[in-house]
Image (cartoon, rainbow, N blue to C red; front, side, top):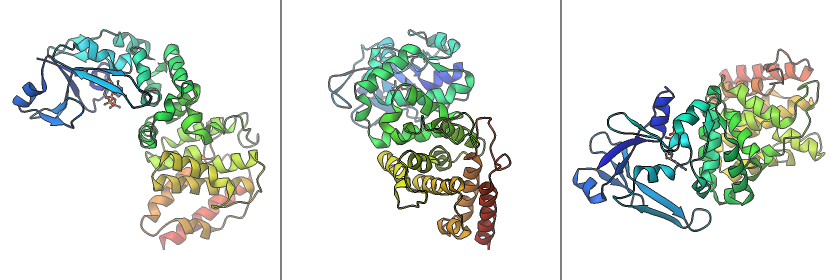
Length: 376
Ligand code: CTP
C-alpha cells in the first residue's frame, strides 16, 4: 500500500503557512489490511481510520458519485484499485487536490501549484456541484486567503451561481451553514465570505436579511457614499483587530438590520425588542440556529445602534438590564467594541471621535455610567 499526505496540509506547506491538521490517503489497501496493522476504524459509512500511534486520519482512496438530489444518493466506492488521481478528482478545489508521497514528492494532476501561484480558487471538476456545502467552503477560503491576494476563478463563480439557481443550496441544513459561517467569522477577512456569497447569489438564500441591506442608502452625513450592505461588511472588517470573538463579529455584521429594514418599511421610529424592527435579526438567527449568545449580542447591538441614530434617550439602566451578573465585564467589553465598529465609515474610520452628531457623545457617556454601575 502507498500512503500520501493530502488536502489542506499539502496546500498550507506550499503556502508556507502553519499546518493545522494532517489528512492521509491510503492507496492499494483493504480495510482488513489496515485493521491488521493496528489502525482503528472511525464510523461505519466511510473508510476512515486512525493511525495506531499518531491518531491522524487515514482514508482509503475512494470515488463518489451522486445519484439523488441534496445529500441523498451518495454513491461512495472504495477498493484497492482506486488510484490516487481518482481520489483527488472528487475534491473541491485544485489547491486542495494535491498529495505528497513519502519521499516528499508533490503529486499534482489538477494543477493546484499553478493555481497557488496564480492565487486562484478553482474547482477541480464538475463534480464540485455535487456538494452544495462547497459554495460556502469556497467563500470561506476566499476570506482566509484574501490577504494573500486569492480570488475565486470566474468559471468557479459561474458554477456556484448555477448551483444557487438550481436550488442546491436549499438542501443544506442550518447547522452546517452556521458551522461554515462561524469558521469564516474567525478568518482575517470575514467580510469576503459574505461578499463572495453575494457574488454568487447565495447570500439571499441563507442570509436574506443581510442581502436586503444592499441598496438601502445611509444618511450621507454619517456614512458618505456607501450603502447599508457595504457598511455592514465594513463594520465586520473593522471588528477584526478589536475582537476574535465570533458573537461580537456576528453582531458587528448585523447591527444595522433593525434600523435599515424599519427605515425601508417606514415603521414607527421608536421600537424595542418585541417590535417589528428586531424581527429580521431574530429571523436570521433562528433560521441559522445561531447560538443564543450570538443572537443576544446581535439584538443588543441592533437595539442600541437604533438609539444612536434615532436620538432617543438612552438610559444607563437599559444597558444594565442586559449585562447579566455572571460575565458582565466580558459582555461590557464586547459591547464597547461593537459601539466602536458600528461607527465605521467609508473612509475607514471607526470610533466616536469622528462622529459629530450629539447622540454619539451621549451614547458614550451613558455607556461609561453603565460600566461604572456594573463595576460596583
Ligand atoms: N474536501 C472536499 N469537499 C468538502 C470537504 C472536504 O473536497 N466538502 C476535501 C478537500 O480536498 C480538503 C480535504 O477534503 O482539502 C480536507 O477537508 P477539510 O479538513 O475540511 O479542509 P482543509 O482543506 O484541510 O482546510 P482547513 O484548513 O479549513 O481544515
